Image 1 (cartoon, one colour):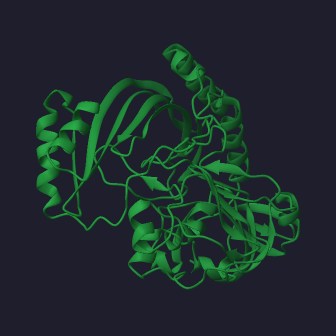
Image 2 (cartoon, rainbow, N blue to C red):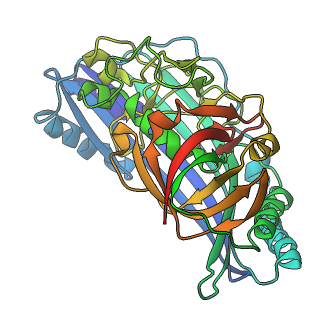
Image 3 (spheres, one colour):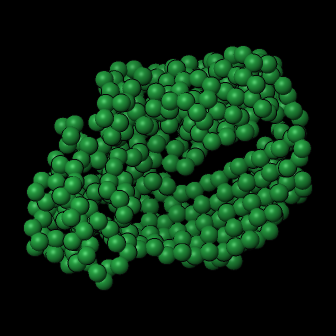
Length: 431
C-alpha cells in the first residue's frame, strides 16, 4: 500500500488514499430440505483515490503486482473527475468498536451443516408440508486505509448470517415464510428462527378476507424497513446535494410523530454495519437523525459534506472498486411501550403486515409506496383470525409515520435496521 501511495505522490498527486479489502466467505446452502452446496470464496482488491489538479481520480485492481497501472489509471480518470472540495483526513483518535468475533473463523463447516439440518428438522416436525431453503454464512474481512495525510489504520470484521425460506406450493394457496438473522457475532439461530417459522405457519392455517378500504395496521419489525426507506434516502447527503430530498429544508422541524427517535450508530457492539472508521478513515460515532419527531441531521461523506459546507458524519461507504458515497450504518429506531399483543387487542378490524413482495411501486424518495402482501393477517375484535392474501397496501411513509398509535417495546435487526413493530391508525387496503 505504501508503494502505491508513494508512486501516486511522486507522479504529482496533491493528495492520495489507498483503500484495501480482503475477505473470505463460506456459504452452506440447503434446498428442498437437503444440503445442496458448500462454497468458499476469497476476495482481495485495492482502490486508489487521488486529487490531481483539483479533480478526483480513481481506479481499482485485484492485481497488486501491477500497481503502476493502478496509479496510471487513477491519473487518467482525474482528467474527467469531479472537482475535489475535500481534504483527506489526518490521523485522529479512533476508539475500538466490537465488530470481530474470534468464534466466527473457528466455526467448522460441519457445525454450519448441523445448524441448518436442525432448523429444517424442527420445522418439518410441526409443519411437514413445507419445503425449506436454508442459507448459513460466515465471513471474515480486513479493511485497511492509508492516505497522504498520515492516516494509517486497519481493522478486522466478522459476520454470521442464518436465513430460512419455507414455502408451501399448493394451488390457490401458495404460502412462503422468510426469517433471518445476521450480525458480527456467532449465535446458534436454528431454534429461534425455526420457532418463528412454526408460529407463522400456525397463524397461516386459516384464510381470512378483508374488503377494500381504510384500516388500522400493524407493521412488524420485519416489514418496517419498507416504511423507513424513504427517510433513509431523504437524509442522504447525495439527495440533499442534488436538491431532490423532500427533507431539504426540514432540519430542526418535525417530520414524523413526536414518539419517534432514530439514531445512526456504527459504534454499536457487533452490529452488522459497525466499524471503528468509515470508508474514508473518519472515526465512527453516533449521529442523531430524529429526536421526538424532529429531524436533526443529514448523513454525509467527505465530498458531499464539503459541497454543502457541512462536516462528514462518518457515513462514507464503499467497496474497494468504488468511490465513497453516503450511506446509513446501523439505523436504530427507539423502542416504545406497547406490546404486540396489546396492539392486536386494540384493533376491532385491521391487518398485520409481516412480509411484502419486493420494495413496491411509487415515488420512494417522496415516501409513496404500494406493495403486495406476501404474508399478512387479519385482526377481528382484538384477535388474529387468519392469513389474508391477494391484497395490496398503499400510502405515504411520512404520512404513516405521523399516524402512530403505538410503538412496540421489543425490537430486532432486519438487515442494518433495528426497529420495533409499529401500530398506525390507518392504511389503504385494496384487493
